[in-house]
Amino acid sequence: MNKKLLVACCFILGIVIYGIFQVQSPGSWDLDSLTRIDIKLPDGEQRMIVEEDSLEQVKSILEEAEWDNQEEASIEGEQIRVTLFLLLDKNMPERLVAYDIWFGETGAILRDIEKEEYGHLTKDLTLNLRNILVNKSKPGI
Image (cartoon, rainbow, N blue to C red; front, side):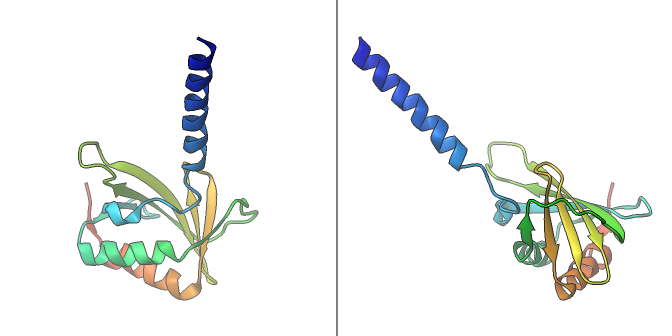
């Protein structure tokens, strides 16, 4: 009896440890499953991106972000909210991941709203991302 209890406890402990190490780090969402992006511009206009080419471009830019756990003391610049739609399992609803993005003169600051973590983009990546979000998106719902 004690041996079965010990085996059961070890099994449960193993599952808990596995789950702890599976927690994703900042910016580590599986962007390969990106199916759509909803955008809320500073003036309140809603837009969306569904074209694969544009989704791929945004994905490659977001993968270049440098993430850290430091909260930005002074966030300035134009703010856009984007919601990524990730299809992680075809039998489940899409996972929604929201980011606030502040566009400044020296680059952009990304905030993963759920994880409360911040990422930074270089000036060149910032210009490319802003161009895609504003100019390659279509009016949304």
